[in-house]
Image (cartoon, one colour):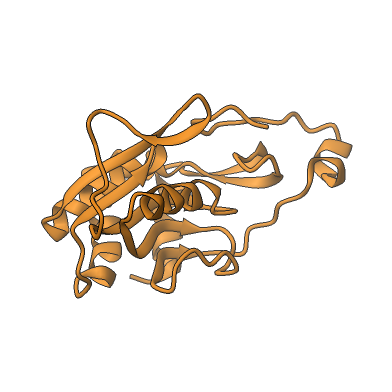
Amino acid sequence: MQPDSLLDIFRETEALLDGHYRYTSGRHGPQYFQCAKVLQYPKYLELVSGIIADNFRSCDIDTVISPAIGGIVVGTEVGRQLGKKTVFTERNDGVMSLRRGFTVMPGEKFLVIEDVITTGGSVREVIELIEAAGGIVVGVGSVVDRSNGSVRLADNQFSALVLKAVSYAPEECPLCKADIPIEKPGSRPGK
């Protein structure tokens, strides 16, 4: 599937929003990808997850892991399509953690799946958690890479859609200077 076709799906499902947004990283920008709006439709969830899964099909993977909340749905579907166990991390007192009885075994091979990568902060935290427990990260996949490929988290990294998204430090944001109201539509409170 071509990137323009995926962008059309994002627009059709109102998952590509235009306005003034505060991203999880704390930066501001004029567009927001709300992947949950696409992934709520089984046909698109299966399609997008299939694009990601196909890229990692030949890899030796034990477990698919995703940071909560955004990555859980797509990570679970990628795991289903690969026939692999799926788990997720979540924040506990601000620290990315495994809870609910999930564990990392030494030598266990993980594929990390996220919905949107902007700075890669959440994925980096998941990678650190895996490696600290003796696990191995064999790849990172995402629905959207807003960094246009500039954020490298693993040697084997793939995104279904790679875009150059504009973002600004809050003190440099022209949208703030124009007094355009800001929104924070993601799953975590903004910084």
